[in-house]
Length: 435
Image (cartoon, rainbow, N blue to C red; front, side):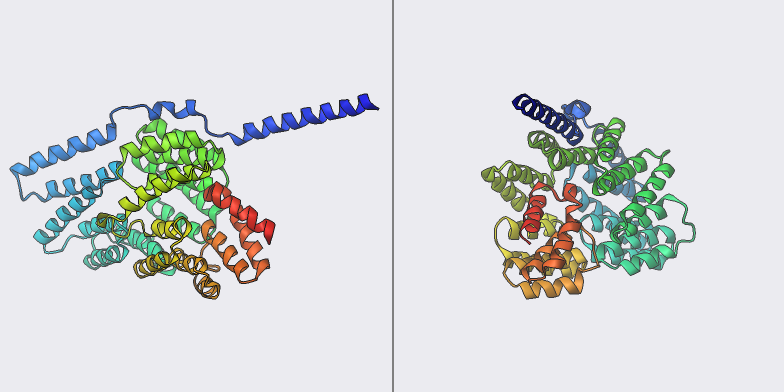
């Protein structure tokens, strides 16, 4: 009997060992050998080319100072360089050049109004973007392009009905600009499966345009991740880097997979630090703070958060980082009053469900559970399907004694564990265990 027991225990241990190995193999998606070449020091070819083109057109403009063509090329290239480096000063310079063109043309240039709208969206100046698009529509030239941008702006402002109205005015629907915006709308409506199908269709149409193809692949990879298709997302990010080794957004996607899915924090930090040294934006410090928190290194986490806070609060960034500053204040610095103030400012700028979520979350952390619930039921329930909002709804309902609804929202949020990250996922597990 003893031998049989030992044999059974031995077999059971072997099975557990095999299952453990299989689980580990399934769990690890990122492999440093796949992307090590993209983390090596090198000249950024895209940035070098952009700088050369700016120098060329500035030299040409010096000989023909009033050339509208030169000005427009320079303004567009400055906007492009911002996307490569994150230097917000390039957007300011681009705006200045575009406005000088408008002044010379008596404000009669729809394409320049659209360009200014695009720059305004980048700076989270959505009211300004809306005004610029209305001016472009009034002029009439390139109406379809203006309607596409109006769709973008309406989505950012939370006017989803307006976004649908603008898009429905487009007669030809089987082409790239229409399809990607229809995908955005489906995603906002919580229909991720349809959004993915549309983005896959868009990718097929963009196959002969390198820049559009890269942009579409990066958006599709994000959607795959949100839908739990993390391995597909990873391989799509790698495919992007194979085409353009300097496409840092794809590296950031891989860093998130290493962090949130594989829990390989040192590797995620290695990638994030590489990106951070290349780009001038504050956001990588947030990821580095999350990584430090997952490693239980609170000193490093607070250090990174304070760096982010200092950079993101710079007047040059305006309202670009309000959401993240608001969440940081309430979740990391226990300052709900500041979160509520930032939330109200965001609501003025863009009255989206996500902006109202910040207000409800601030009230929740201030202990004003009834006020949090009122905001949630008026502006959040059935109006957004973002996983962080679903988690917040669960916490708000739980605090108000509605445990059944709380569990429903926790379960919905739990399906997006990859998108939420380890810390929030753990909070969801604890909430479900205690409810």
